Amino acid sequence: MTETVYETALIAALRYGDESVFADLVDRHTPSMLRVARGYVPSHEIAEEVVQETWIALLKGIGRFEGRSSLRTWLFTVMINIAKARGVRERRDADTAIAAFTGGTVDPRLFRGPDEEWPGDWKNWKEYPRAFPETPENSVLADELTAVSRAELDRLPEKQRVVVTLRDMLGFDSSEVCDLLDISVANQRVLLHRGRAAVRLVLESYLGVGP
Amino acid sequence: MTCKELVELVTTYLDGALDADAHALFDAHLEYCDGCRNYLEQFRVTVRTVGSIRDDELDPAFRSRLLEAFKGFR
Image (tube, rainbow over all chains, first blue to last red):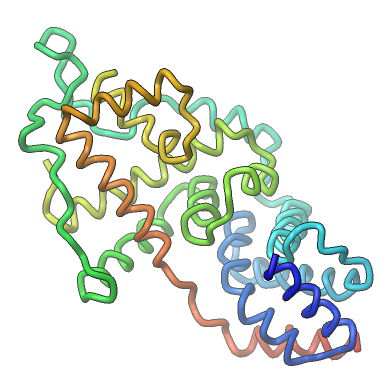
């Protein structure tokens, strides 16, 4: 609610041509917009063009912005549409391509085979998986883990990367992400889960608590 | 529910989207399985860690271009 009131005030200021308000909005949203746009287009330069077009679309439409969605959701919706219109990496069969994924996110060798006692359970549940060590916020180790997870996020397949970025890095909720990306809840969850599992694996390895 | 099945349901569980039966089985499994409890906690740490990633600073040249565009609309 407070956010909405705040945004209404921002929009009013923008309509009056307040450049400092525009600069604040640009600083707040542009880096994450670039990050997501990059998932759709083949170069950083094109991502910048897409983001610039989005800001211009906001300025053109500012008289009509009704505040029904948050400004951030509006920006990402418009931006993804512009990015798709550039057409470069869009695939209409997005959902089918996701559903075609099979196989688990954890190395099957870590589980007991069908002929063993307790098939499908951890091979050695007393020793694996182990807890991650405590990492206090702002500690050196916490910073290292952030860097490791960031590097892995950048390496994820693009659909996983976009979903994990929107959900876990930027804090969009599940239904917003489905609307933005035009994918089903189930497929969104598959992409999120695979992406998180990949990051978990590198953290485990970095922390030296792997199998 | 086996451990191998549970690890694929963690994201759905964290979203609160498992149906009531599966949710109960998941919770019951955690009661006796240290490995899966650790795995779930690792996933929570992973989500928090990704949430702590900050974006790069905006390239000043690009920022100026955007602010220039704004002037055109005043």
